Length: 404
Ligand code: NAP
Ligand code: MG
Image (tube, rainbow, N blue to C red; front, side):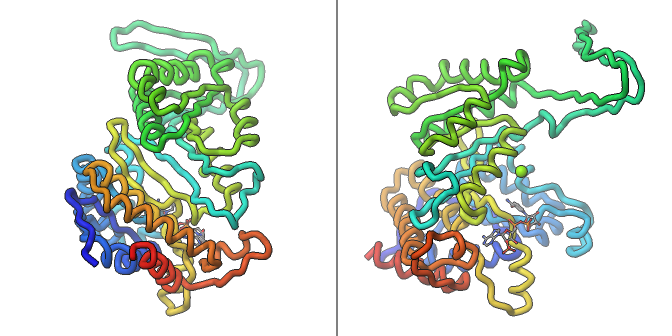
């Protein structure tokens, strides 16, 4: 069989530990035998980040900006223990954080769903994609503990020296204070990424805040979304038959639980943090969660939502057998190849991405899976637990049948 051609390179960001091992297996078994793969390779493994003083991360993000599509392996975010383990000269920042800020992007997380794993919420039939605004609010807050009665005020001095002030509370006892901020530019980027992703995936977009209580802060989010929708995206949404829908966060929660799924739910930073864990847990497994970073100008970076699976890696290093689920990482590859195919108008490449995903789903439906999924499948399903390599080989067998 002749290999499928590509025209523009994919930005490939390699990573760490167990997912780095899976990365190579996926390429060797599922991509390279079928695709004449063109990538611009960046090694974001911690050793290379240390060697380049993290320049490699910045370079990879700029390449993603240039080419428009990237696929990323999970990477270690250094902490104190990693600094010792890898003998680092610096506690390098999270690569995901660096890439996200260079692309000014929003992260969309969606589960891969199969018929034999039922979500905890019985009526969910389609994926619910969570879009979290990852800037500001409580994550960049300023807090004060007050120990005595006194007056708390909010004061803003603009660049011309004009002052706006308001009383927060006249404390008659001890208590706590919190200052939050966000920026119009960041909210606007978030909105553009959400509308673009809704169009790219042809799904409805929901957005929810608490604007009835937060009449300036949350209200700004609501108004920005509405304004940007009407100005830039309404016509395209109507053409595609998808809708933009704003509702209060508490109303949204009730609707989400009763829904069938199949839409994107955009949330402020804290709401997104909480709701993404709730939704991913209810769908079954972190190992089945995909993640896409989308910039406001429509660049895409695909990855798995989970980390480098350190515990399995240490077992692997000891020569023990591991059964690490490669699904989310394979879907990062298929997602990136399909997006590249869309941008470059390459039918065969797009078709390959689809077939690869179908082969993965077929393999799971045949009962072949990694150990993490065994306890999640519905009773009565015939199950064969495989190690990571054998599972990938099974997927390859199914893929070869599909491509024949
Ligand atoms: P993790 O790698 O996601 O793994 C946590 C646990 O979840 C694993 O020990 C395993 O449970 C289970 N798990 C996750 N993915 C799995 C898979 N594909 N197959 C089977 N089981 C899976 O999180 P972590 O251990 O907290 O973090 C490890 C490293 O990853 C850290 O250095 C962190 O900085 C990094 N990290 C990177 C990213 C990213 O690059 N996007 C995201 C998160 C974390 P059992 O042990 O019970 O089998
Ligand atoms: Mg969280």
